[in-house]
Length: 265
Image (cartoon, rainbow, N blue to C red; front, side):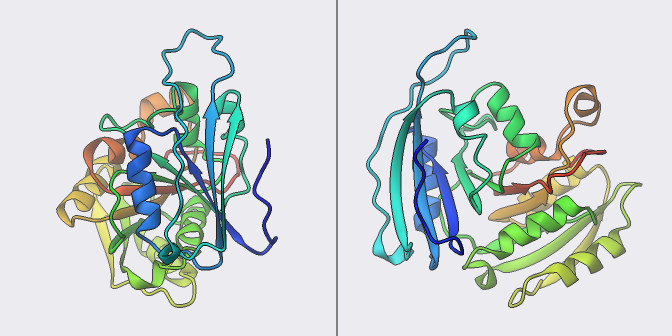
């Protein structure tokens, strides 16, 4: 696969573009922000073959040019053939990967079946799921003291517009998390220039209380780490990420620290 050539110290935003309406929403979100010092790579993957009988949508190439106001240092749109689950899930180099999402809470277009599940529980790079296309003004970072939460903070903090939002830190007392310690660690991990307007402790099942918090506060973006449970453990515990996609309209930024998982995000 041909990849965008850029300086090694540049941040890369990878936009997974299948030409469907959810991708239009993701594009609107990207271009509503300013990205000085970042490169943009849009990738459209055309299925070369389908061997497992899945009902998959065909990607459509749409020529997209970011406005000058977006301030990308460079941009490219790449078309490749293959299985998106191989081509895109292999990309660990982006600073941020942006995808669209349809109303049922699954990634649209090229994301189907096992690709969606893998991206949800074990993102190869920080992934932003775009539910709406307007500029981010309010952000809730969900923390539990784990390396995955710290990775999510790092990913959000790398966005050049992060310092201009109203930021809340949220931790849930679920019987496993030391919320006060988690909030202290998160405060200390915030990159220079970022300050949380509030730090809040919630109590109850994380899937429910975090969705309620995001919905009641009309949060634009929820940021959290995912620990990457799979199989029976995931079926038993459920997924906070999936609950947020199902029960809120907020955009979602998820990240994984890349170490063995022991519990659910």
